[in-house]
Length: 390
Image (tube, rainbow, N blue to C red; front, top):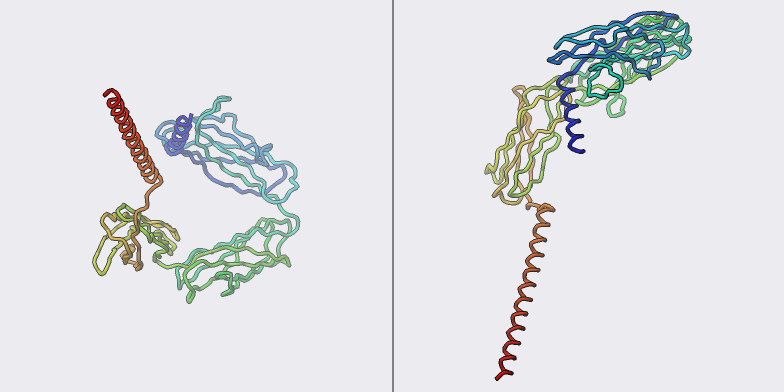
C-alpha cells in the first residue's frame, strides 16, 4: 500500500513538471456597473511535448459564480508546446450591497471531464475582481519603495485609486523611515487633488541612504484625504555588492568524513553569480587541509549554506585555525575562526552491537564454566565408581 502511494506521489510530481499549463492574464480588475455584461478572453499555454486536452471550469466558491457564463465548448485540445484561447462572460446584477472587491476564479485543468473519473492533472487559474464603489470618499493606496544600494537615493511612490463615489479634493502624505523601530528620517511626499471617482494619482518623494548602515528599513507613510487619515508601510533593504559569512561548522569528529557548512548571506539587491568558498585549516602554521565548495548563484538577500567535506582520518584531537574565503564577482570576503576535532561518537547501532557482543561473551564464558564443572563432576563420579569396584 505504502509503495503504491509513493509511486502515485512520484507520478504526480513528474506529471506536474513534465506537462504544466499556464493561463493569462493572471488577474483582471474592473469597476462595477449595474447590469454590466462583458466578456474576457484568456490565453492558455502548454509546455507539454504532446497534445494536451483541457477543461475550463469556474470555482463554485467564488462570490461571482452565479453571474459567470462559460462557453458551450468547455473542453478542447492544445497542440504540443502551443496555445489556445477561450472567452467567458459575466452578467452583473442591478446592484451589489457590499463595497470593495468581489472575485471570480476561472480555471483550466488538464484532461477531459468524464464524470466521476479521478485522475492526476495540472491546473491554472485567472482571477476577475469587480470593484464596487464605497459610499462617500475612499482611497485604495499602494506603496512602492525598492531595495537600494548604500549611499544611493531610493524613490518612494504612493499610488492611489479613488474607490469612493465622491470627489477627493486634496491628498497629502509623509513617509517616516525607521531602523530597528527607531525613527531616523522623514520625507515629504507632497500633495495632489482633486481626484475624481475611479481616477488614479500618485505622490512621490526620495530618501538618500548616505550615512546609513546596510540592513533592513521600514517606511511608514501617513496620508490624509479631506480629513480622513490612514497609513501604509513597507520594508526595504539598503545593501552593497557583497556577501557576509554568518556562521560555520565548529566541531568535527575524528576519523570521519565531516560536513563543513558555511552559511553565507547576500547583501546585494541583484543576483550574484559564481559564488564559491575555499577554506584553509591550519595548526601551528602547518596546513592540515584545504577545502572548496561547489559554485552557486545567490539571489538578492538570500541566505545559503555552502558545503564542503573534511576527512579527519588520522587528524589529531584539538583546536585548529581556519581561514574561510568567499569568491564572487572578482571579489573576495574572508573570515578567520577556529574549529575543534573531538573523539568520534559511537552511534546507537554501534553501542548496541558492542553491548550484544559483550553479552554474548559473558554468556559464552558462563557456558564454558558450566561445561568444565559438568566434566569435573562426571570425572569425579567415574573415579568413585572405579574405587568401589576395587
